[in-house]
Image (cartoon, rainbow, N blue to C red; front, side, top):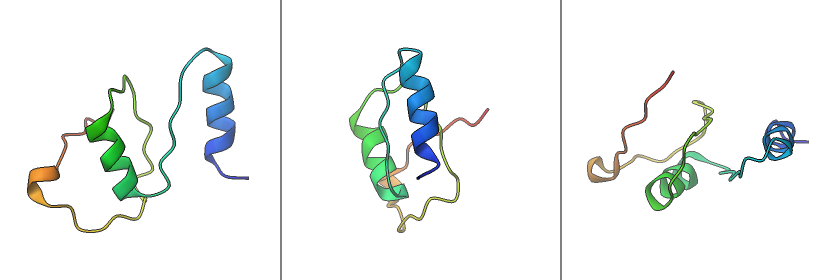
Length: 61
């Protein structure tokens, strides 16, 4: 079982919608294409080199 499944279950139980990316490139595409109120990120997600014009500002709390 992936580390994402318990978190997804818990968030959905409390009425939150969820989306899961399997790698950094997919996460970047999702962030640029969608509207999210919160993103939980694994900073170790594998990602290919990102072109500078595709960089999205991510605020980490």
